[in-house]
Image 1 (cartoon, rainbow, N blue to C red):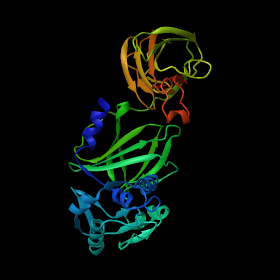
Image 2 (spheres, helix red, strand yellow):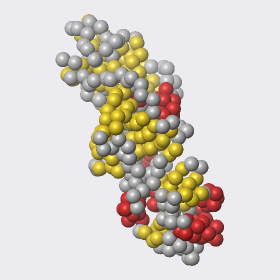
Image 3 (tube, rainbow, N blue to C red):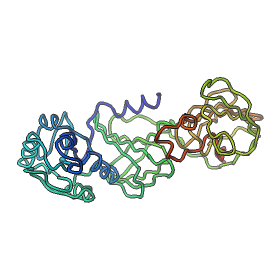
Length: 375
């Protein structure tokens, strides 16, 4: 919730910057037989995979919309084009609004075919992203093979705020993005409490996000001093003996001994407890000859969330990669006791209609666990 509050503080209350609006398909679906209409999610999916942002608006909203400088305006939001999913027959209210847009020079893109008596430009769904790019409506462009990289742009209080999120839970997102602004900016990774200054001369930014990782870039606004956390220079793989205790979902505080091992495997693998749902607690001892500088405990792979305590002091929680924790102020010379508590979901114990056909991800601490520090 602390992360959510900070992210909402940056993103809420501004103007969402987007490329186009998609007309909600309700009337087309109601007025036509099956096969004679297209669902809104068809063009929406294609635009999303092409890294083109959009909003979905209904007919009533379209009727209240204003037109200014060849663009559609709704409650302060500006759209360079209206995308209309195909429907063989559409109501007169939509026809009237589309005619109004066309006469004012707002591009109306009709998906796949022309509905009866409807003005606009017919574009195949697969060519829809290229047409929006050609119209110069793309706010952000992404170069790199990362279809599940999502972005959001909002302007508020004189600042441009961009959020990037890697929805791919198997692969890292590595891309170069071109933003419509340039200059100095703050790069914030709120989950990891990481912030630093950066700059771009032409709006080009390198984005590298692990599965499930996000970051927020802030251009303009109040210029505040930011703590800069430099990356540790040395990584040491830890191979301790783990005391593992478990607490089932029915009573998450009733931990019981499971096993002691120096090998990290999925608790829900076929050889262990495939239906387990709950908390998995790993305790081990970390001996140190001296207190390392800039020390970070990196857990490697985790399924799915992790909390860490060092010598009884809470180091934080992570809900996605990187599962890394700054522990420089928590460790001391000699024996250090590290406790890692991992929680998974109920999917192993309570299978629904969707999860029966899904590969269930591993559970527990999977590693490799590393201590990162300066030389």
